[in-house]
Amino acid sequence: DADVTQTPRNRITKTGKRIMLECSQTKGHDRMYWYRQDPGLGLRLIYYSFDVKDINKGEISDGYSVSRQAQAKFSLSLESAIPNQTALYFCATAGGSKTQYFGPGTRLLVL
Amino acid sequence: EDQVTQSPEALRLQEGESSSLNCSYTVSGLRGLFWYRQDPGKGPEFLFTLYSAGEEKEKERLKATLTKKESFLHITAPKPEDSATYLCAVQALNDYKLSFGAGTTVTVRA
Image (cartoon, rainbow over all chains, first blue to last red; front, side, top):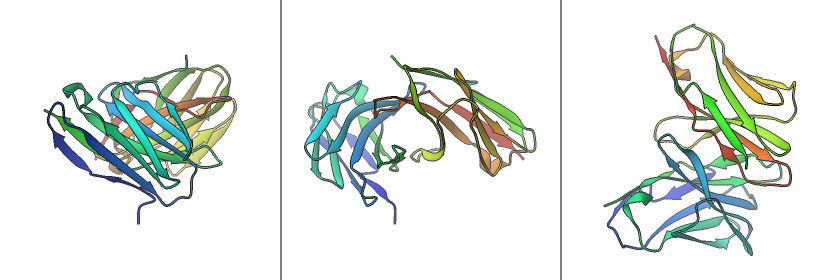
C-alpha cells in the first residue's frame, strides 16, 4: 500500500466551482505539504503544516485554502477555481529527517 | 531568496553513454540538497540528500556530488529505465521548505 495517497487522481471542473483535493499518509509524519507543478516552472509550495494546529502559507497560497483534519490528513481547497489553477498537485510528508516523500499527484483541469 | 537552476533542460543519451546533470544553487546557509526522480504522471521519488561540500552518494548507476555552489548527478552507463525527469531541491538552515529547480528530462535510447 502507498504511504502517501491522494484523491482524486484526476479532476475536471468548471470556473467558479469549489473543489477539494485530499491527502492521507501512513508514514506517521508530522509535516505535510501541498505543491503545484507546472511545465517549466518546477514544484511550487502552496501551504505547509507542521502539526494539526500549525498551518503556514507557501509562496503561492492566493486562491487556495487548507485543512489539517488529523495528523494523517491534509486537504487543499480551491474556493473558486480559475483556469490558471490547471496543474498537477502533489502532497508531500516529512518526518524527523526532513526528507519529503511525495504522493502520486492529482491532475486538475479547470475549464 | 533561494534559487535553484538545473541544466540542461533535456538530455538525450544512447544506452551506455555516461553524462552529468547540473544543479546550481544559491541559499542562505544550506541544510540539505535533495535529488528526486520523477516519472511521467507520478510523484517525485526521493534519491539522495547531500549536506556538505565534498559529500558524494551513489545508488546503482547514479552518483550525486556537492560543492558550495552546485551539485552534479552523474549517470554511468545509463539504461532506458533511467529515462525520467530529475529534480534538484535545496533546503535552507532554519527552514522546512524545499526550493525546486525546473528539472532535467533524461531520455535514454536503446
